[in-house]
Length: 375
Image 1 (cartoon, helix red, strand yellow):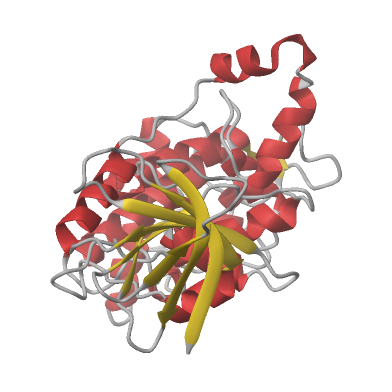
Image 2: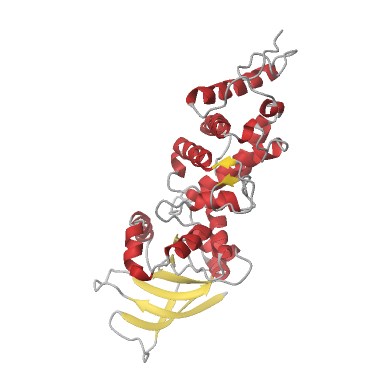
């Protein structure tokens, strides 16, 4: 199919070997139809990293959170030599040595067009079904694989997070910071000490902790879960997997997959302030125990932490071996959030798993937290 797009040619540098760029708008779904995404794991010439479903979902949440949210950033593509025709207008409002208007034309059946940067942005916008979303595209014309790889590395290593103080200086005294925080949190964007992940964990239906956090933003829910417990357990998850260090979206999806399996296993305990499962020390201890097991299984190559269905099924299979009565029966110790109690909880959980494997043994034998039933 022949494609034709009007736009702007930009020759940023005078050197004859410097690439020419062409900027234009197109529907995100349309761009996906004719763009090739070559990933490192799939193609020797690939430059893109693995596509993460969590980040695509985050883009959709960003648009759903507010009807005026937009993504003005462009995606970067590259045309291999010989597959695109370009034509500059002889007379145009924009016409200079380095910038001119015109159009490009190519056959998407024959053209080699690579997505250099912006794959998650493009997929996220294309999957948003409520409305059609045009995306700004910057195309590198007639460039080889080396130049494409160079641009990818530069783009992905030059990004710097904007400090809160810089944001305030930009908008000066006109900043309504409270309104800004509300919008940023809803869009899943960090601002200063405010983390959007906590708000998503409390607000989103995909979160097992929806309307359960004990904090100011939970205005109508059942405040039974300590915010600190969530923060600490997420930190433990991220510390356990270096891949999650700068990937909030994947951390959110993985954390929710783990605890969704827990919630669906313990329906009577979930959201119940009388259940030990909802205690701060229990959330931290159980989270540590589960994350340690997931890490071990992941390192053995049996699951992919970015395929959250695999994580969910693994956790569901594991926690189903731990009876809900463990969380509902009166414990023999005073429940405090300290290392000793956390260790006791983890040890008892491991003991229950061992008891279930031994024929004729009660599940609650030889536990530290429950009355001794081994006799």
